[in-house]
Length: 355
Image (tube, rainbow, N blue to C red; front, side, top):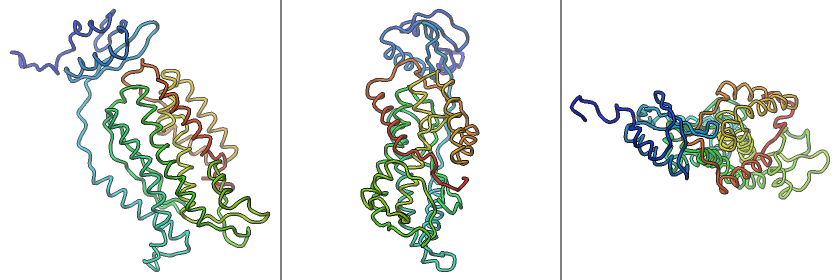
């Protein structure tokens, strides 16, 4: 603190220190233009250290042949209320237990012990969703992003009992590479759990004659169909596989994986797409939205998801470092995301059902 009572965090960053890592051309308020010294990534790291001393954070992007950095003073986030996460998790366990029990023919309202019939479905879907979100959380924290623990979303929907789960990132993502890594971590982890859940569930499933049992017709993603064929073979004409609730949890986990990988807005695929495209994502997002709307001709539920993406926002906030390109490992992760989307996407997930 100086003799006027001003702390360093109240002052603008020293332009002389910034000029050690960047050829400064203009300074207009919190916006600085110029040319970052090479290697750019090291200059950005050094400048971020300078901004941190002043309680600020810098956002770096290209503009023409040069660079622009804008800095901002971020408010200190409030302490997380972990009890909210716990209550939502308990509520989601309850709603998924009810759904799983109903799938097994139980009625927990008449016979409370029937709730135990819902354990396979509840355990399967909680494991898939939980691993998905915990992977986001762990990777985000490792990369310096202030992220919350998962929030589960319980709903009284008779098919699922949940709308999934999410984490909140309470600080900017440091780079396009971090966007890709945080974005793909959840789908990879959730998919890795959904595979054995689906395989065990399908092993517990049985083939029945169509019409002998009430069947909810489901479209099958490529990988789920492959697992089913390995276990049951191709059903005879007039027969189909009646899914055990654990198998349905695996199917649902793959469906959620595909939804999250749609390259739009704040979805995991949106993070990955921005990591690849940077500012060009602003044009790409409209093609994605158009494709989702077009799929509404196959299944009306896609129109609902298109509206949901719009409601949550098509815009994607830039990372702090919007300059440094993706490396080879990042590009491999992007390829893995594309493959995962192809394996789990079901154009008509619920034939004859709207949403």
